[in-house]
Image 1 (cartoon, rainbow, N blue to C red):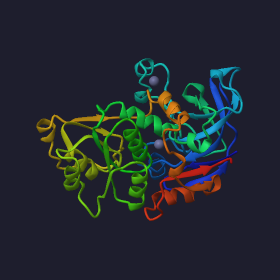
Image 2: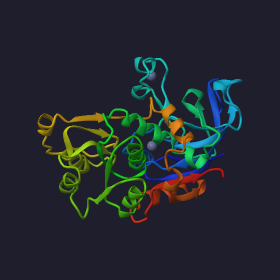
Image 3: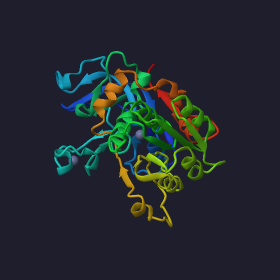
Length: 340
Ligand SMILES: [Zn+2]
Ligand SMILES: [Zn+2]
């Protein structure tokens, strides 16, 4: 089968590899749609740890093509599925206490085990989720991100009528914006540096948008939301954005962090933690959000397909990654289609 793989930093190669062999707890999935994520880009360029050589990718939809043992997980051939980004060792104290995300021996798709930028992917059946019959592969590819946003969202004490701000209106930020609006934020503001994304944010319910290159969100947001925002979401992974996000939290408000940072934060005034009794929540992965993600997809509560801006066949995966990193391309969700 064909797979998009990394043997050395900064280079993706398309190569033929053998079909994965299944252990008794494994399923084989025929991959239809894969989304490019910032983590995949980090693996290619070496700032996200990975074991090379590896097949990239962890966000996908596909159909069951084989089972390691009969009736495994209740799956049958042809079921449309998506999956968690990996699975734990099953033995450590984190795995045994429902905190697989902290497992030191976690099998991370596209990092420590072969991922889904391939015609087929092998996974432990416990990390695989069946999607309802009214969900299509274009929607299912974003399952993991929806679960991650649900997990993060559940940490925030959002009340009806609250005001929220999302810093970073990429794929995750736009899912969060939609969830904030459908769960009762009376007003939401979106901050980004790309106008195209801010236009999308307006379509998805943002009442106010600000381009942080030309205007200062720290000045504008308190004009829209006097005293600041009840809930602030940091989804950029950029440390200067994190500083600004902290500056617009209302006294007694909270910040939820879903960004991954590769740079250090220097000279940061922490007095707001005392002055505002601000709470900062970190959130990692989609655990405890998977069931709700299935429900949200089934209920068609989120606009997922309209976020897809580019599609490439598997052979053009390197071009997809170039497009992801080219900020002039007006890219949002870039999809690779190993099968159509
Ligand atoms: Zn991802
Ligand atoms: Zn473990």
